[in-house]
Length: 123
Image 1: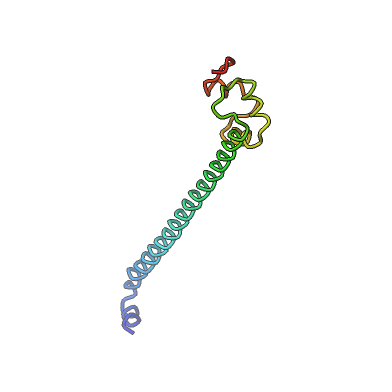
Image 2: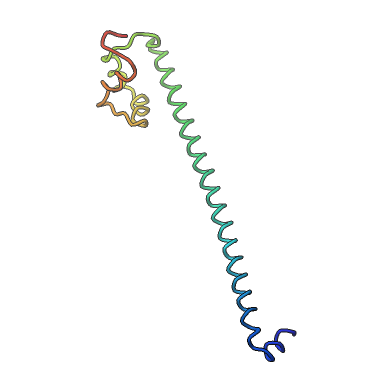
């Protein structure tokens, strides 16, 4: 009721009011988009942490399985030679899987054995 008579009397008043409306709308739109993006990033980080926790749990279960296997076969505490190491690496799927997940493949068994400090004398 106030604006129309004012615009009819002075048409240039329309320009600053229009600029204010457009600027305010643009700002509110940016704030809404920022909130949506922030929530999306938070959810993505939570999913990443959940995936990492599941992966760690799976690796812990595999390690427990490997320890149980070693305890059941009486190999805990024995001296390890490359021949025994390679036999376990190639014959046990759980062991092979753990090594592959960390980027070591059965073909590089000699290097892995040396990295763990083994030698052919059983030390």
